Length: 151
Picture 1 (spheres, rainbow, N blue to C red):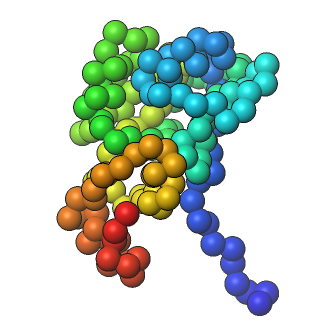
Picture 2: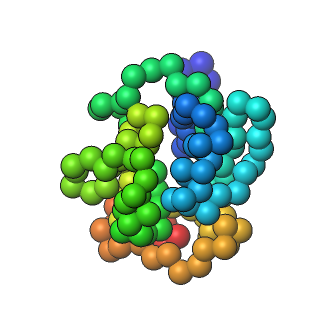
């Protein structure tokens, strides 16, 4: 039908501009277990199950202020600890926000507390088992008619 619109289904990837690609891989490798999906001389693609993070060499913008992207992790406190002693700048916030060494603003949220859900087979493929959703996240999913809100 001509008046129907396409539906946004989620994010495939986020692209971040970084200064030096090797330094960026080293920095993010201190924070996360990294598996590369692909790589060129100026880009690296860090696998996140059915999504990926694209690091592109050559920062063309000033550091981010309000603009950011939300990154879902299994353990926000463990990430906070890993950030200490790096060149990242942890920002004051209700949760965990930081600027990476190139000025990319990352807002970190924990999987259990949000409606974002990975399919069980994707989690298994990532080697992750037993991540549970909070009752609030389950209720939010159920309120949208998304089953019982189970992972």
